[in-house]
Length: 381
View (spheres, one colour):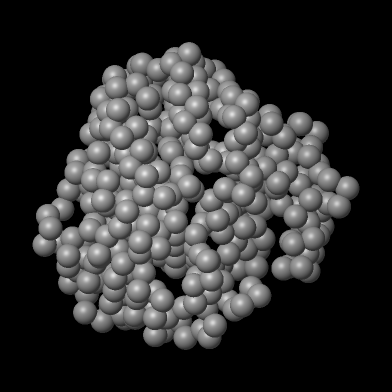
């Protein structure tokens, strides 16, 4: 419970894009305008239905994230309807409101309208400053289009701006990645997310013979991100995220610190109290639903988390952040210290140099541990 009421983070999935990228395994696609309009109307209905059932008093929305797909395909008037609907059910106390944008998908006036309706954070999907690499990834834009989009975003009055970059791209080497990273950092952004390409089954990349960097080069790229971005005042605060002080993404931090969140739209995930679930991934099923009980029956990955599950997730998600897991916060939530619940796991990874333990009992990954984070976290499941 926050100072003003029960805090809730909101995710809105807008699964629309001009064309699927070759590496993308997100639930999204190039739907027509009729489907997009029907989908927004269904979102408004789902928000009403959710809060009618949730029935919590004094709900405070701390962050809202419009993700996709390419949310910037949706007219700002439709985005405004969603924000107004949320305001009917909960308090807004200076929430962080983010929308993802792909370069080349919006005129300058679009960002002015976003600013007018209350969006205060823009996340731009760049991925690379190399047009050749962008073409390899199947992106629909060029680096010049990204720069034009960035200029429009700044001209509209936005100061909280993030960009995504990708490494371990086919044909990429360390030097070319460093070139991308420095060119983006030189732009003065206050947040950069850097993700390694993962070739997922079911994507076009999965069936292609790709010239991928070796694991050693990929690991060097990852280590280089924090070192290089630190030169520009961007400090690593999570495994894949870097920010200037005060510009850490509040929405993602809510996930990593175990806060409750509600997701709306197809394939959107929620964690309400100890119930975790994901909405149906079927657009047809989602649009056809006329009552909330039926929508609930279409949920997947439904799980009532036990106390042990919650403790495990608190550690696994907390270790994603550089500050790690607070023993004090863990004790306040579960009535046990980290060292009481996970003595063997903590000792093992301390001896391996992957985990460090502070005097107050808090734990966090070392630099080496961040390289092997999946290995460490697996022991806390």
